[in-house]
Length: 163
Image (cartoon, rainbow, N blue to C red; front, side, top):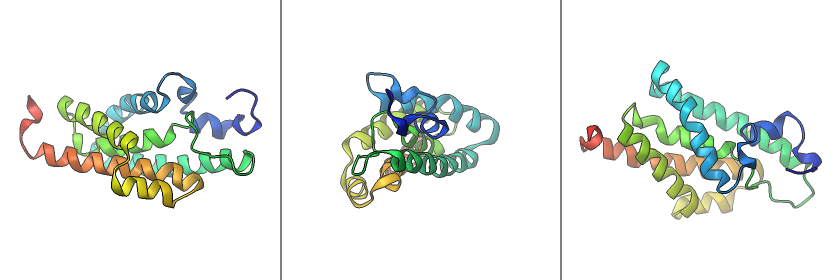
């Protein structure tokens, strides 16, 4: 983050997940990995609906923090910076919602979320192009998380989750 005034204070700390986004290489993947332990705790103690609720809270908190960072940046600067990874945490939480406590589904959820977040097939790419600013930063990861969750849920119906 250097000495950029846009990246000082509480909002950038939230947007970078406490500095996880500053780590290299692959800050997006590291942001998704950082989401796994808290998501596991939420799933363990409160279940999948709480993971879904936490994803929504991360969306709101992420939007506010990214909006703050974007507002402090130079005009025309892209707020979808590599060091902002709260969007990955939000999408990863959403992707984990149908995984319950199955290790197979957690691995699948992580892998599919990262695939959809990087590849951005069809509607995910459209969302990324259609929305700008903080909504654009957050919503493409929400779409990637929703796509991963749908695939994880479908796979869970096969019964192969206890392998």
